Length: 425
Image (cartoon, rainbow, N blue to C red; front, side, top):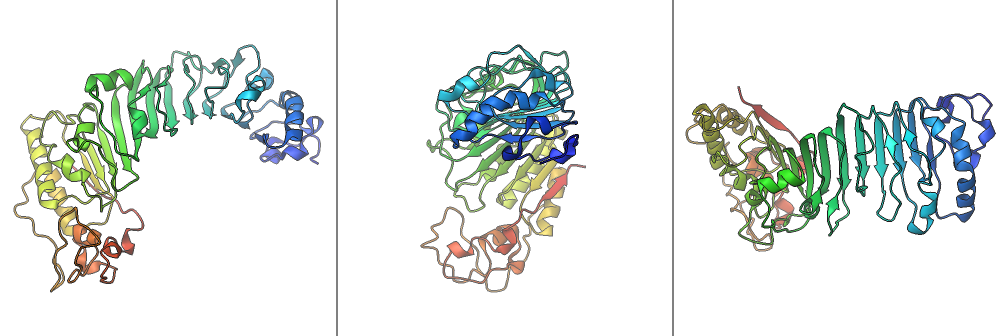
């Protein structure tokens, strides 16, 4: 039992068993309330007390709310943060968003909505004229324009879609400076966010299955469905993730993103196809990613060609063939200092001449080009792991030679990401 008059700091974690509406006074700073569906006796009590319980507070900072029923509007006067998680099922939807007047949130700056499924009635009208950040996870209401209708733009709208949806994702959004969307590769092709007055879009894409780019995959289609995509992160979760059509490459997928400025590629270094190499040879084409300024990759490229393509693109900028130049290149794995210095020269647009790789151990042999069959590969004479070989770090490799090629793909130094960035002068 808590004494009468306790402040909000005394109630940062409130257990459902200890709730007594008459005992809570003061200014709430953080409340995390959870009603579990699996206990019938809890449901009845929660339904009866929720509105009375919340109405005694005037919170002035945070509210984390994991129950779908809306309390008395009088508590929202100074609220700055709200987190609503809806776990209610369809047959209990009458308890979610009961008929109420429009709710006003005059000071609300951050709103997080999670798991508002399609079987739940329409989300109540929110009015939050000072809203800065809107985050929606798991499912998206079909219309979010009513949340903020102020003259100033929301700073960021963050949508998280990981439902492997086969139908269309469609929603209308409030105007915003930036939209960030986290989703799986298959959901990207059915997403329509009606991007009215959204200045820039960032995509974080999980590539977890082979895909085929649809025929309408063009720059005009992307601008209409998503808006101006300026930032993208592609993260492959499977070594063999790629395309069902062998004629398509990662270039086919990226080609329509004509406004893309920042691109990050996360992919296993032992994948059969190397995204970095596919991308590099097209960097000299002024029509391919013409706005690209920063490239980051977790793969090892074929160094001689990669450095040459970077140098040629930078020289093309000086000659007026490209509107922006590359300003930053990041390799998110360990590399030898000699290779890093060559990369600096290339992004500066200087010709590095013949590439001299760091010295290998005496008597060692080279790994074959990918793809190779680990079960059939002869590892005799290979004195370092595959990743150290690609990094030019053969003499510093931490692995012992083995007859199993699979055991020699990476040594312990690759358990943590290492970032090597170079910048244009």
